[in-house]
Amino acid sequence: MSTTGATDRPSPTEHPTEHPTDPASTPPAGHGPGERPIGYWLKLVDRLIDHSFDDVFLRTGLTRRHWQVLNMIRDGVSDTTTVDSVLSPFAAAGGVGGSAGHAAGVSAEISDLRTRGWIAQGGSGWEVTVAGQHAYHDLLDAVSVSRERLAEGITREQYDRTIATLEQMARNLGWAPGT
Image (tube, rainbow, N blue to C red; front, side, top):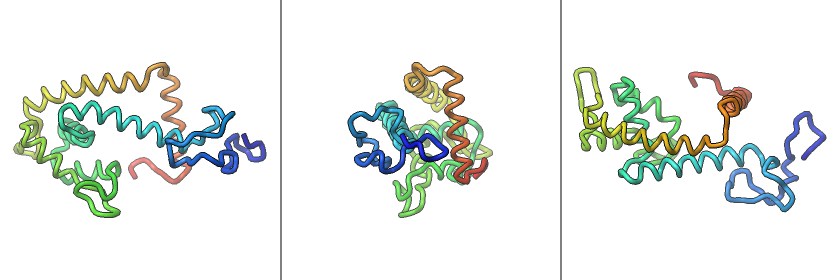
């Protein structure tokens, strides 16, 4: 660990074989997990969460994005434009339905959920149907198992502290609530 700075974090030269952007890379021998940079852990955990949820949804032919759209409509967001704008920061740039540098929209997911009979146009926009409510609860059970697995061995206090730390790091880098 670097002892020259005000913070206790490794300098870029202390991990010459490790790429913080490559979660598959391994640190040099003798370096413990606490010495890997924050970017390594953020990207690794994000990728593992995605894979865990992908496994849950793969069984039903859905994606995590379907789940997000269904949740938003269930929570009362009834128009495609609002669903799209809320979820767009989480979409991969250039993904399905998107172009280079632009996030994919949610029209494909809405169309699929409608085809499955899980949502329908109501008087005030999209609404979850009875079949959609049943599907939602089945998926929620599977998602809950995945979330519980993620939190195994972590106390509520540790979880809350981690979230608060990550939020502060985001604020330090210019993020503000609502952006």
